[in-house]
Length: 195
Image 1 (cartoon, rainbow, N blue to C red):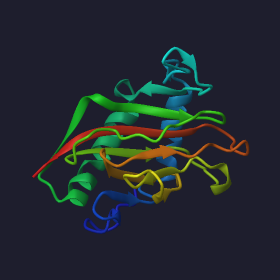
Image 2: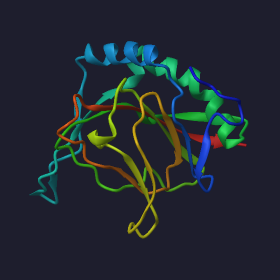
Image 3: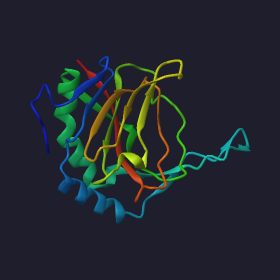
Image 4: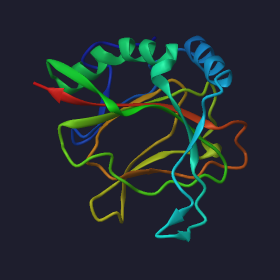
């Protein structure tokens, strides 16, 4: 784990609304978690290919409930202080009914621009789990202004990187390239900051 100094662990990249640590987890930790993901038979499709009864052509991506996995408790224990420090809060309470998933984004999967929630006190944390991810493989997490006409921050899914952002910020995932060797795996957890 590459912790940096406590105050410098996460970098504010957008007005106190998005924080990033570009290499928090080491490759050997990612290896163990990817092995666990590869041997889990609990993957389910998320999303729908229909809207208002009409086929949209969108292909849902696959998710895995992470609460049953060892990686869930490991990531939470490793990142809890990181979140509290970045937000300068006394506590961070994780939601039981939101997040707690691992996404597997593949070539052909689609992502609409969306908000995770309406409140500014609620946050989403994403940990990028692939041991390798070339910039040419796509799959960036992109954040937009309220008018959805400008990308205000784009995060390449660096292996072991962590991103923390307000749920009220519009965001989506850029398409994964046919050059990618595997799905883009990311751990997602959500919670609320308490001063």
